[in-house]
Amino acid sequence: MFPLRLPLLAALVTVALCQYYDYDYQPVSMLGPSGPNCHQECECPINFPSAMYCDTRKLKFVPFVPTGIKYLYLQNNQIEEIKAGVFDNVTDTLRWLVLDNNQITNGKIEKGTIDKLTVLEKLFFSNNELTEPIIPPSKSLDELKMMHNKLSKFPSGLLSDKENLTSINLQHNQLTSDAIAGAFKGLKKLLSLDVSHNKLKKLPAGVPSSLEMLYADYNDIDGVGAGYLNKLPVLQYLRISHNKLVDSGLPSGVFNTTSLVELDLSFNKLQSIPEVNEQLEQLYLQANEINKFDLSSFCKYVGISSFSRLKHLRLDANNITHSSMPPEYSNCLRQASDIMFE
Image (cartoon, rainbow, N blue to C red):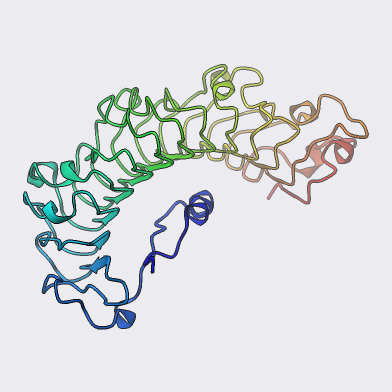
């Protein structure tokens, strides 16, 4: 029986909605008797013989992993180092490795550990002390989470052979635009990228055309390059809230792309509503400096089949009120069920 209940599709939906952890496992009370080959500090349920649960046990080290283990849970411990040899029995079987909420630094990860995992699919390494990413050699890697570390660099080429990687979460680090300039080169199936809470001055360069979700909230971004979204033809969710966006940093029509479903530009310094495509459904512009309502931002012209599909529009905490809207707005925004001004 597969011990992890959340399929990839559900995981991606979770990313779109809340951006946080999405692994799931059996609670300790349901694990049952442990198998005979399990490390004494952990539990390897007979019902799930391919999983080893070592989470929340005040461990200072990564224990040796017995043959046959595919899913290893080590989160919520006090682990500071990973010694060589601990994965020797599972170099070609371990698929999930969860190391969240520990105290691991790059200097305490010895050679002959993660660098030997050739079939790893998911690596969760959040809430540690990493300054550089740790990437396994596995070409099967499809999900990488290194949130809440101290990453300040991401050397180009580390992910160049990760053709199956679909989700990367690097939020809450110290990454700059230069540090990630070549980080995503070679990726062909990436769907979700989260670089929120870093030190970016512009949206990440070199992201693959397969991307559907890009989150860059809480950075120092003041503009978006002309044609940036043209290189991302299937991008549906774009979040750039809590940055330094100004009107002069947004070329005309930069957000006018048919694929976008949600656009979050809240908590910036915009004085006008940027032009968006009629297919956009969610637009968040609260807490800017907008002082006029220009209907042409939503509709170039209005007809039987030509109108905005916008459903939710937030304009609260700006310098306009409902009275700023022209009388003909109801024809253009005929599907908008929620327009907030306060």
